[in-house]
Image 1 (cartoon, rainbow, N blue to C red):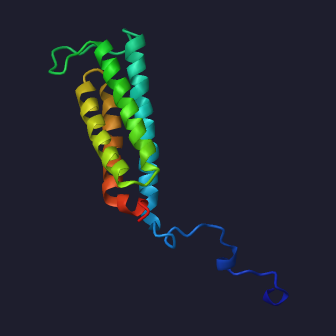
Image 2 (image 1 turned 120 degrees about the vertical axis):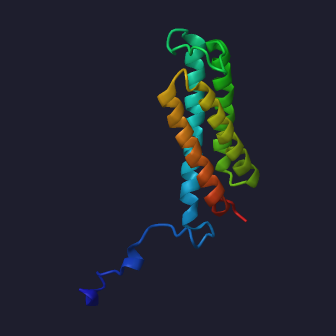
Image 3 (image 1 turned 90 degrees about the horizontal axis):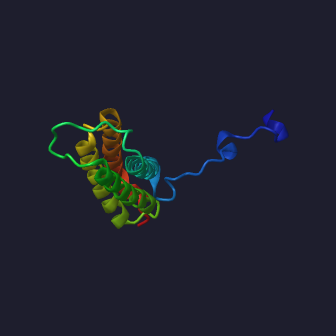
Length: 149
């Protein structure tokens, strides 16, 4: 029914934005996703910290381990770490080079904190370490596409 003007080509019907034309390319998606995950990891750390501060019975106390702190200390560590990681994730959305650098550093610090926390909550610590690895990969490999140059 092309003669009646009703049929439209696929190109005319597409309502999607072409990120390649804006210079960001298809690589901006992983960094945006990493920013969201970084914000979520920050919130997870903050919640972990609040739980450790408010409830002494929720987490198992590790036996002999090098990083043996009381739960109040761990609570403050996770709460402050959560705020740092959350701020780094929010900064990624501004597309600045400093935000990418801070995001990688915050994810590395988060990995170290979760590694030290493993005896208290191992499955959760490993899950957050895996998310931090993805964040570092996405920001380093695809970060340049997210910056408006």
